[in-house]
Amino acid sequence: MTPQPPTSSSSTSGMHELLEQLETLEKTANLRSSIDDVQNAIDLLTTARANLAAEPQSAPLTLAKLQDPLKRNLEQAQKDLKPIYSGLNKYGKALDKKFKDKPLPSASNDALSSHPQLINRAIAMHLLRGGEFAVASTFVQEASRNPPHPEPTPSTPNPALEDSWEKELAEDALNSEKLQEQFEEMYHILDELRKKKNLAPAIAWARQRSDVLEARGSNLEFELCRLQFACYYVGHRPPSDDVMEDSDANSDSTAPGPMEAWAYARREFTTFQRRYSREVRQLMGAMAYWSNITESPYSRYFYNDYAWEDVATSFTREFCSLLGLSADSPLYIAATAGAIALPHLLKLQSIMEKTRTEWTTQNELPVEIPLPPSYHFHSIFVCPVSKEQSTDKNPPVMMPCGHVIATESLQRLSKGGRFKCPYCPGESHPREAVKVFL
Ligand SMILES: [Zn+2]
View 1: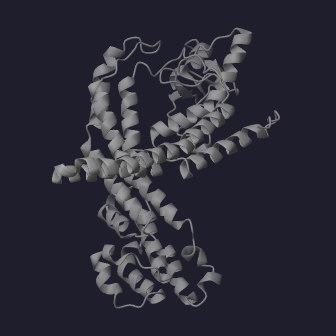
View 2: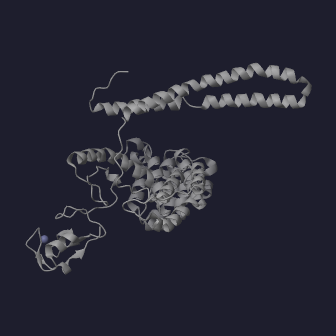
View 3: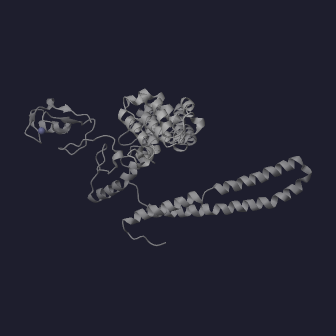
C-alpha cells in the first residue's frame, strides 16, 4: 500500500477507496452463494430423511450415499465464505484508514441521556418511514420489553418529571400500526412511480385529497397529470392492469401518441383550467409540434429524465406532510448535521483546552456550523449589542425607530427609563418596544 501524501486530496481518495471496498462487498463478498450452499445441504439431508423413513431397511446405503455429497457441500460452503472474510477485512482496514481514531468531544452538554424514550421513538419512526417495517416492528418489541431509563443531565436534572408525556408520545408512535399501513401505501405508490412508471395510483391518491392539497398550495396533482399527458404524447402507456378504470375505457379507442394525449387533456384538465391556465395552454401548444417535438421549445416537458424522480419527491413530501411529518427523517437530518458539526466541535474543544475557556451556554453552539441551505429550518436572531442568540426567555424586541435588540440588552441600556437607540439618534421608552416573532 502506498502511503498517502498529507494533502487535502487524501480525504477524498480515502473516501474513494471506501466506496470501492463497499462495491466489492456488495458484488462478490455477499452471502448469496453461502445461502445456496446451506440450502443444498438442507435439501440433501431432508431427502435422506425421507428415504430413511420410507425404506428403513436401506438405511446403511442411504447414509453411505449421503456422506460424499454432504462433505463436498460443506467444503464448498467454507470456500464460499472466504471472499466474505477477506472483503470484510479489507473494508475494515479502509474504514480505519479513512476515519483515523479521533476521540469524540466530551459530552458535558449531554442532552440525550435524559430522553431515551424520545430517541427510541425517533429510531422507530426513521425505520417506519424508511419502509423497514419488519426491522421497525422488532425494534419496537425489544424496546418495549426493555424500557430505557432516563439519566439526569445538566439541562434536565429530573428526567422522571418529564417521563409521562414523553412516554405517551413515544408509545403513540411505537404502537402505531396505522402509521405502518400508511407508509406501506406510500411505498406501494412510490414503487409504481419509480419502477413501473405508472402514475395511476399516485394520481388517484392526489385526486382523493385534492382539496387539502390545493389548500396547502401544492401542485402535486397537476404535476402528476402533466407527466401523464407527456407519457401519452410520446406513446408511453402505463401497465394496462393498473390503469384507472375511467381512462381505460377511453384510451383504448385512441391511437397512442399526441391524439391520445389530447383526449386525456380534454378529459382530465378541466379542473386545472382556472389555476394552471398558462401551463395547460403551453401543453396544448405542444400539439402543434407533434412532428418534431424534440426540437421544439416544448421538448423539456416530454423528454425530461428527472420528471419521474421530481414527482416521486413531491409525492413523498405531500404524503408525509399530510401525516404531519417532514419529508426527510428527522433522525437522518440530525445525524447528518451532527456529522458536519463534529470536526468543528473537535477543533473548538482543542482551542478551549489551550486557552482554558469554557463553553457556558446550553442553548446555542459556541461556533457557527456551516450547514447546507436545505438544513436551515428557521431564522435565528443574534443581538447586535450582546452578540447573544435570542431565546424564549430573551426574545428580540423592536424599538420605535425600527432597530431590533434582545430584551436583556434593552433592559440594560434603558434601566427602566427613556434611552437612546445604540444604532441611531432615536429615543424611546422600553414599554414602546414590541416583541419580534421569528
Ligand atoms: Zn434606532
